[in-house]
Length: 288
Image (tube, rainbow, N blue to C red):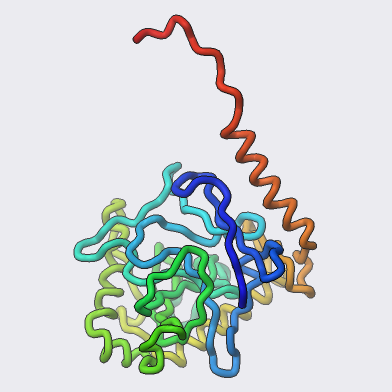
């Protein structure tokens, strides 16, 4: 599908936002309005790239903000960057999420014994291209890793961009092991240790850190899509999540293009009022 992005605010600031527009130039939510499937019959999914490979800024879909733009995560009042964990530089894949999925924090997974992390399901694209923030790619699912992050189930789905010149050779998790030796081991190592520089312990995994295959991963994605359907139709309590959308017609959260435009303009106006105030009078008694 044809999607463009629009930047508001300066990168690497608390006010930076990346909004999404459809082919008609109307604002949409990357969480709710981009279809989960690029080709349902062949199990080809859409994915939203949040963090390009080799970069460190922890960008994410802002699930609690209207229209869910991309923004940089904040921890303890500071913009969040992932440390370089030797020998890795930043994220070692294009990292992102599959739209119209949701890991329900009230549902205990029968396989992991833990509830969901309240976010869309994450993807790690192992293709050769370094993608851009906000890029929408079509992906083949290859397998999944079950990270247990602070007691929550946080699935990491291994995918490859269908436009990758090597994509035809990748159809299941064993193909990654065979054609990209060491990549899966590096993935486990990265997720295990990436929070240690922040003073946190190693992350844990279900299934002893073993990857589950393509069929298991697709089943997991489809289950999170069902949780999302309950969320967007208000059959599940959204809590702090913002379900504003412009295309899910049966959703009580569906709004007009004009309402979506007004949301973006109000955010931009708030930014201008905060950052373009007249400067105060200079204190003549200031010491030099």
